[in-house]
Length: 247
Ligand SMILES: [Fe+2]
Image (cartoon, rainbow, N blue to C red; front, side, top):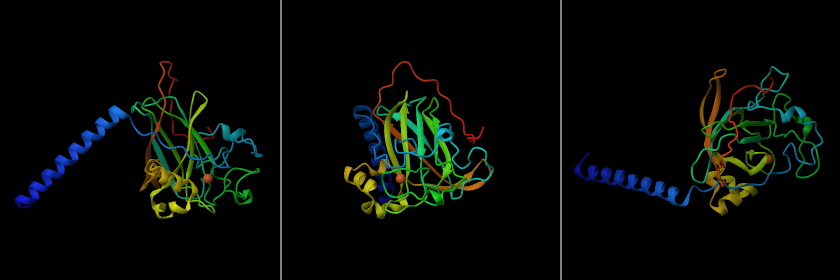
């Protein structure tokens, strides 16, 4: 490396350090940008139009690849989705409920009812638990074992999720995928977030890895969820476990 390269490298490092300091200062003074909300869509399993039995689903844990009473895991690409829940000050939120729901590998939701585009329940993967929930631990961490969401007509692949604190919904949103960025303009949800300038807070960019549970190949993605929420003194007791829902 010649003198000029050294100088440029040092300049780059200084610039990087300055940018990091500035971003820390901005976070401290102005707070983190809240994760944008996005439509719940027509297939939230507990909405008022649902005709299917959701009693078992309501008790579902954070492993969507294994349905209660079954031994065969869901079809599709294994996906380990995790993250943290913080408020705009960057403080971890413990004891919050994170719910996810998604289309199975055939592009079908656990849903029969009116509203929205047709969801062909006849094609459902019986080994996929289409909804799961978990509780954030003391560091705000949450995680799910699931599959990469199936593709269905008119949308890019996506996870739906909700954040609930003390039974109140704080955020309803969606995660989409970096690999579909070129299609965001044609997707009603992603396009809105692009226009708002908040799309990157909703984009997952998974890396290939292995699920330690059974050494299956898996995509792994992590995302921070930021909510505009003031933590009160009476925190909920946190607990988190990665376990099949049939226990
Ligand atoms: Fe959807």
